[in-house]
Length: 399
Ligand code: NAD
Image 1 (cartoon, rainbow, N blue to C red):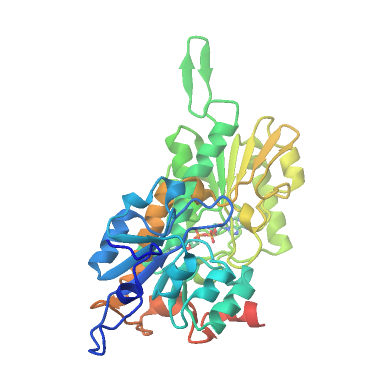
Image 2 (tube, protein in one colour; image 1 turned 90 degrees about the vertical axis):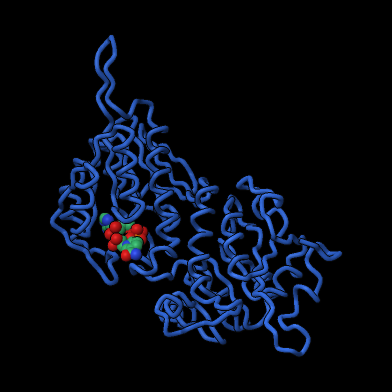
């Protein structure tokens, strides 16, 4: 593809949606920005998905080096133009793709009425959300994709959580100074490690499956009773505390003190006999619930590890320091941030496919056609036409 002098296609080619005054539609222009947050390796577009977007009739420009961190150099993308200048890239775009919420500067450069597709988490980004509203950007926030069967192929929370769960189990296995599977040697047998997974959503179930696959004896625990059968189908024992904390939309609700005490009475001995604990518990829009107290950590086996995959929300253990590895006596607490980014290659691939499946809903005959009767589009929209469309986000941002 020919590039203009600035490295992005010239205005005649890229910026005009109409061919003269004939009203003939030009392709939808999609821009992909390079992620700038510390430790973010993912990129919102991979070559295979770029090909599919081109087939859909889109014209794609990327910020130069956007895929470098996942070993996708500019040359890996065919039919894509590259630009160094982010203003030039986004100001002419109909759709901007990103992984992390873009900076206010980037949003400020976007054209009024254009579309942004990215993770946003409005309650953590109130100023950015207001800016998106005021700039009349249509924002599809990937964390808002509804958890319904039809939207599974667009569900980036699930695709990224599955990778995190897998990696959490491996982190646990490589942190302890012992074998995970049973092993028979000339000098006797080594017993398998015990792994306890707390919080059995997408990440937790993947952590259970991975721990079992590498030979651990596995136990799972959650406050949603339906997870019992799911854990058992993965060969794990379910720790039943008798507390049912099912909340709205299939998510867990916050627990009362009496419920927490009831759980602690049952769960403590499981915590204290585990070699590896992986915690993944989250309540949408709230800090992570504390599932492991300081006293419980102090009673854990010497050499054991907690991998806290809920660190971004403050963590599930009272000793967790997000982003750090902490030593408490003989127990190690690993609390990584942005785990999917550590598996950036596959995380980008799955994320790009999730975004493609969403885009496919509204690019028809080479034009953008937003059908607000479509439940997926309506529920994923964070801002549109100068309004915050998501009720919870609106309350969090506007009060
Ligand atoms: P999540 O990240 O919100 O939470 C992880 C797990 O922590 C959940 O299983 C939750 O029940 C658990 N948890 C919360 N508080 C807890 C506590 N105090 N003690 C123990 N466990 C606690 O979960 P997720 O992975 O996003 O999944 C949430 C729900 O959405 C699940 O019901 C899942 O099956 C469902 N889901 C549906 C679809 C779909 O239908 N398309 C897709 C993905 C997930």
